Image (cartoon, rainbow, N blue to C red):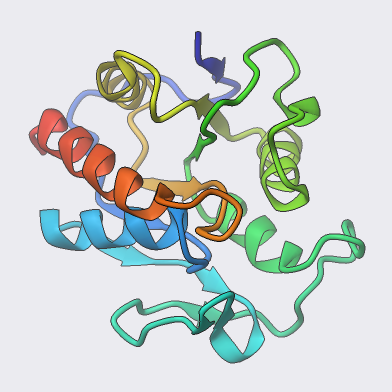
Length: 187
């Protein structure tokens, strides 16, 4: 079962998903941005200073803004925590795609999540943003995500999860899943 956290969002007729944001890392972040761009959604988000990602530089096709510092004052031990915090802050909802993620009431303690993903989950709780943590490989993931998005009706969705090096193939899997999700919304 996916982990759901609906703290402040409610269904609003006529409200449609307009924008997908992420931090630009390889893997989930870039896969989601590519699917959103292909579907005609606005894309953006905050990235670390220098536009660095594990592959070198974040591709220029992604119009991300650089944060003034790498680490948030609230999470100085977590690399790239400032961009994560600001992406959660600037969104209405956060979708974390976490392959093999342990399901349960406390996603922040998930043994499969890296410090950045755990920080994303903690920020969503602290900033009272709707949150869905979903295993993208789980049967029915696409339908559950579409249903959740229809329920919380975010204008801006933040998508996060592991990098390509920590989860090989996750970028392509995210792209395919998010493309189907965005088509399923029919916005």
